[in-house]
Amino acid sequence: MLNRTYDSQVCSIARTLEVLGERWTLLIVRDAMLGLHRFDEFQHSLGIARNVLTDRLKRLVEAGVLERIAYQQHPPRFEYRLTAVGLELCTPVVGLMHWGDRHLAGPEGLPRLTRHRTCGGQLHSELVCEECGATVDGTDLELPPGPGLRAHPDATAG
Image (cartoon, rainbow, N blue to C red):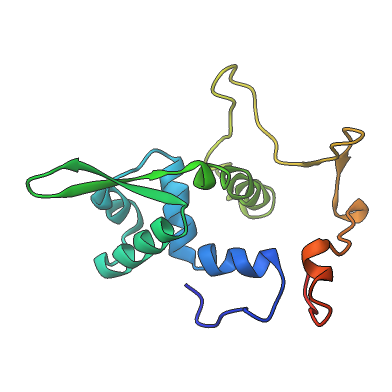
């Protein structure tokens, strides 16, 4: 995880970075979204050192992003599945992927597509207003203080 904590900041982004802000962690979540579940699968996909992978999986389980499920008793073996909390990460992870697709894709094209499993339609990550249904971009985005920030008058981050 991060070498420093953001305890003094009342900010959901800083809190999220404490859980997901290390590159291997987000790639483990990506691989779990792709259907990998076992330690060896993650290690093979990522080329990550065993001790680093062990630490990242442990932290994701502690944070409630993954659950550790025994699939074999002798010797004990476990797999890692996204929890409901982990599945909610699909939206921001796909949003990061789409940003990378728009700005960093190679000349060969997109590395992966995002499709609706039920009908096959392409998916788009967007901010949509729950009131009027409009798609909102960064120029029309407002981030006013919420009740959690107002409870901390010395907070400088949002």
